[in-house]
Picture 1: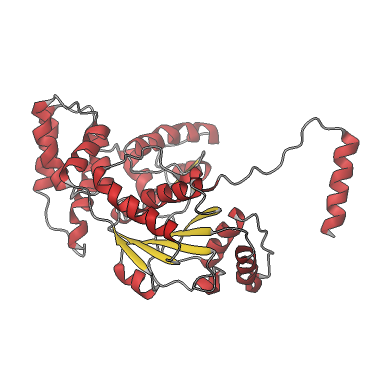
Picture 2 (picture 1 turned 135 degrees about the vertical axis):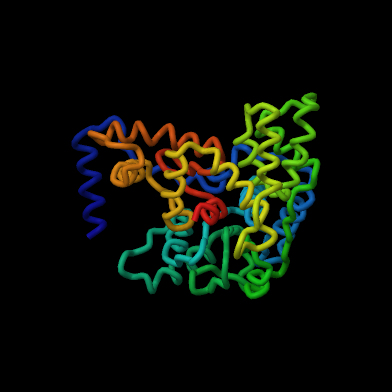
Length: 364
């Protein structure tokens, strides 16, 4: 039946004599999700080299990168993935987000898409087998990056070959919890620590637009960075909030961070990042606050269409009354842009936004 439709399509194209025929674009691969704001910190270079060396080694079939939320695990693995693909150590690098709880069907679909493998609807029980066959039959090595893993995953159940008998496939996972690496039986676990003082300050200066010769603000900046706990996500969030502020406001922000009350049910390692993001949230406009809270209600790593945000925003009365869809969209766009500039929202692709999992936790 499919063959007949293909013949019909070919005949139509030939009879209509189109100059051009649009087709689905090729998948952009690992390069499409690499951060354009990547900074090559000294305290990250050793970890990056260790990871790339382990991947190129060929003796590790499952590697774990562990670190607190907001330490830059995703950035590091995507950069490493790009490097080993460019060096030809791997024929293909696949990246997919796992999230919590894991959606196995979505994971399979993401991997299949990057392998140009159509998965038949209604035959989900065959998807793992189809993926397995495609991967083992690829000529050359393949790296599969599973980002943001919260619990043990059944790789075989997904369709990912792994082990001594499947040397063409390597799996790299990122996780907050060392125990996940252990139950997944990672052959190597690399721990990603927070930034050292020098790199943390440089990151802050870059995002706050602070010149090195501004001695009056530099001292306050060092204290603010300490309150961020060396977490890149917290530093960037606070720095973008304070950009363009005067010295007095910086000092007030520092006092707010230092004098924040105790947080209940928060892991001690995350207290500083929660307070940093809370500071940024409190200085947003009311509309931006409401939009961020609305975004946090979507599932983790969900790519939210701007069109849907516009409809929901109007329905909830976040932007007042709107007579038509176009005016609603015009109200949403500038607020959305403010949140992206504040590093509280991500823009994975055009006309969509999503929240970093840690920002989502704080918002909730």
